Length: 57
Image (cartoon, rainbow, N blue to C red; front, side, top):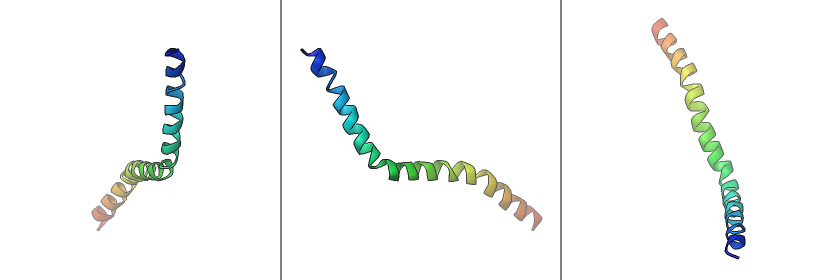
């Protein structure tokens, strides 16, 4: 008996977790993606560009 309820428990918990996460996902994903993408992606290019520009100037 405890095994059955225990199994369904994790399932429902994971489901609700996925639901709430899915809602904030758009915002969290955009934030994380924007911070992770632009940060590393923009860090190297902008750093190189500004550096070259400053060096040129």
